[in-house]
Length: 255
Image 1 (cartoon, rainbow, N blue to C red):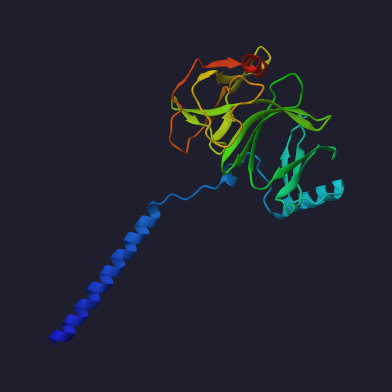
Image 2 (cartoon, one colour):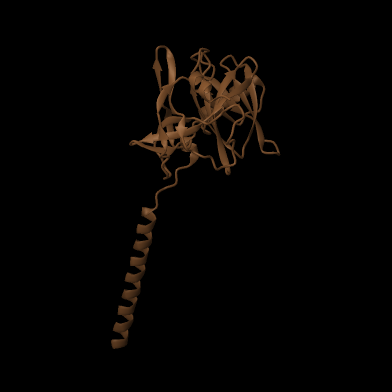
């Protein structure tokens, strides 16, 4: 009888121990925050594979006679109508054509892009022409270039206006503006001109494998963004914040 009781007690202890271990493991798993993928915050907003959007891709591909993998809808020419940025088939070198097609289904730009980087773009008109400038970030494992591009839809070529350092202002603190953390460019319209919130007084040094010393610039200005930081590390030594037009910034930093 004693042996039987001992066996039962031992079995109960083992069961309680296993349940406790399982509960602890589940508790530990619940504490781990889910990973947010870049695609959720990607400013390109590539089309997902839904039936309606696949139909858009098929219709567009037929109209321009191209093989298309994805489509982004954005008014990139400033006429108030959505245009299309389409990605073609990836070749053996990991490159694909990026076709910029206006609302009249005319190809106005054809760029070759790598699938090994990740492009983030924001659009804002900063000068007298109707086409918006592009804040573009090309992210690779070893660094990223942050540039403002001026479009020329007649030639199909974009011109780099300047390289910049992106900084988020959050709760009166400064954080590096990773493209997946920023939500909007800090800008305002004043006397018919769009101005950017910026600083030319800082000690930020770039340490990745990117353009650190542009030939046509004396320095890289800080451009401020709204957003929420996901990585610690304050950019503390920034001063003399001011509102300037893009042309004013370029004039101050050009060699």
